[in-house]
Amino acid sequence: MPAISHLFFRAGILFLVVGIGLGLAMSISQNHDVIGAHAHINLLGWVTSAIFGGYYALNPAKSQGLLPRVHFWIYTSGVALMSVSLYLLLKGNTGMEPLVAIGSLLTAAGVLIAAYIFFMPAGVPARMQAAE
Ligand code: HEM
Image (cartoon, rainbow, N blue to C red; front, side, top):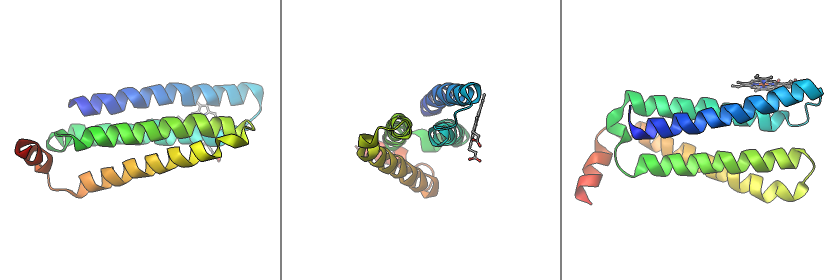
């Protein structure tokens, strides 16, 4: 499996551990105030990261070069920032709003990079790397 797939799966499983932890905490406390953070950590952090990791594993030619690593770091840092700041916002820290916005925009930028990679012909990153 390409290294970038390992990175996405490792980040994803960490998000799942946190997301499920929040789900259990909500269930036990019967206080569902952080439902938005729970849903986004699980769906953006775990499900989407695992899909990206699976995509690179199925398309190893697309996993080469700098762009997949840029994709990983922008997407993952965006989801991490959004997760923490959204959790704190939902707990009443209204000052977190700008950080939620920055995290959301980074996450969206990561998704746009993924869209570019998905549509790009296989082998382009390898050729770009060779030209560097
Ligand atoms: C041990 C695992 C989990 C527990 C204990 C748990 C618990 C909860 C709880 C208590 C809620 C609030 C329900 C409500 O107020 O209506 C919730 C909502 C939600 N959970 Fe989880 N959850 C778990 C895993 C997951 C996973 C793995 C995902 C996604 C991959 C997920 C996605 C969602 C979503 C999208 C909602 C919002 C549903 C809605 O608004 O109707 N959960 N969960």
